[in-house]
Length: 143
Image 1 (cartoon, helix red, strand yellow):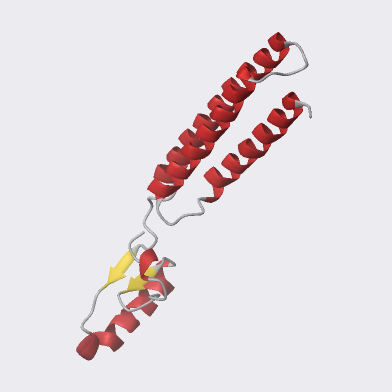
Image 2 (cartoon, one colour):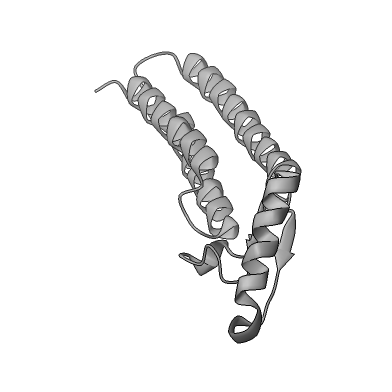
């Protein structure tokens, strides 16, 4: 019955959903994840703007002020999280997963490549990838 309470609860729920969505990246493509986050923020902005024009029993100045504050906080929080995720994406995720890559002819050099990998791992304690290893999911091969 109380429009201000409903708007506050819905805004809080959408804000929580947007923060989780930005952190967890539920889709495979980063573009789709960003589009989903932007659409969630757009829904939140529409909800808050709708609250500004709705008829409520409390004073209109109170609701307008709280809606404006909520809008600014959500706007800054959303773009702060997006900026932090972009910075983390470039700083952390763009490091190579493997330090060495071994490509070999499967019929003639498989044993030598495996031996080379074993020796490199023992000596350098680094991750070494042979082109026939870890191919359960081809999507993660080049990421």
